Figure (cartoon, rainbow, N blue to C red):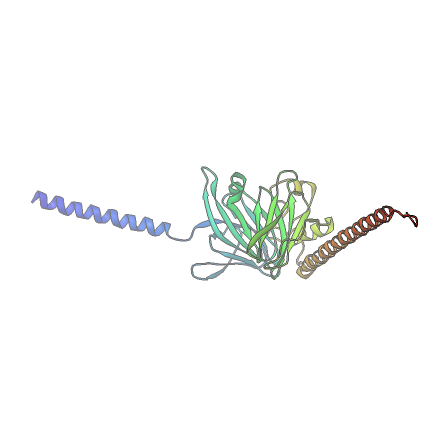
Length: 308
């Protein structure tokens, strides 16, 4: 009889253990939190990857891996990841947190996100500072690799402007795209320098400088300011809060898109001028060399007097 009760008790204990384990597993099988929403202003929503459910975001709400965060015409926010990576979005912008793994004890992990449209700023966090290759941000065409810094950009369709904000002498970014099956890119290590990726199968244009006026307009759309401390520090400052302080009630998004298109045109014209100058210089050099050879050939002709 005692053995029978002991067997029954053992079965009950096993059942309780399995049930408890099932609850624990179910609890960990849900969405993985990547960060929180902060400084939310205007219309901001998140679309969950699991069920495509759409819900409005407010400051303090959790953001999960796989979420697509999108702002409306008057929307702004920061997405603060758990490793202190910061994504700042301006109006009519969107980002998706594709992958987020983080161990706060060691700062090991991986950050992978996609900037889908609009105006954005990214400040790299602890994961990238420990191992830079573990953070990347994809663009509609191309991607950004981080070396412990912050960067801003504008996306129009599949065209992207990417500009390094700082810190000077420490941070850098590597912008790449696949061209004819090969990865090509440019390295940017000076604050205010930028490149443009025009779309699929297009190499990033050679690095060029963005004017202070255009940098200020980009920062303004993000609810921030470009100051001396802003371009040399790694922490975001000056973002507009829920009350709407900072940038006013509206942002002319089309004006920012025009910045991208204007800079792209200027960059292409600069490249064409440089190529023309190089071709002209090469042609001049070839002509000079040809004339010199012809002159030397004429000098080498010796006249022989008749009868000799």
